[in-house]
Image (cartoon, rainbow, N blue to C red):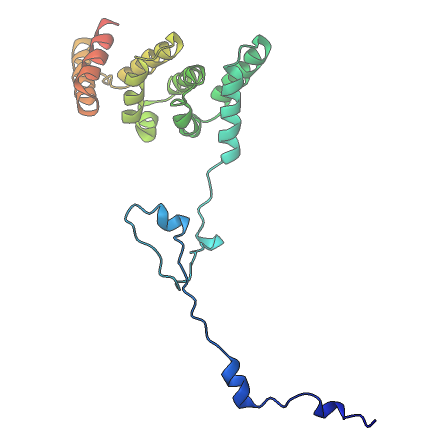
Length: 222
């Protein structure tokens, strides 16, 4: 029996036949809103075909953080000084006092700005004591350079603190600021009057009325 060639065994499919067998099925794409669009308060969503872009900042435009290690070290010492362990607390206090007396006051005060608003009561009190120590070494020009307004506002706030250590540090800061308003070589009575007037104007200009009245009453009785 003769065998048919293999090439003739299969039907020949032309291009026309292929075209008939191709069926286009429309597919509806449901755009699922992204998390970004879902959280957008204005309800704006990105177009389906929009490309997400990210703005990058070159290293030349980045601003360095000023002395991050020093600020972290200071906060760690304040946290250790606030512990209940006596030995750890005492050693940390010694280190903080050494830092306060060895460092230039203004850079240290800049680091303490954030610490004196710490939610931990003990950390806040320790920071207030350090600020008081720094301020006691500063002249009137240095106080103004750092910011007398910030100091008097923070001291007025600390006068109502829950811990007595913070309140005592605040009173010390207030007295240092008050003494910086002392006159020069005038007679005692004249100098005292000028000092009280300048201090009163300063407090009333930079504090709420109740805080200003409290500070004025305190300094007059000292």
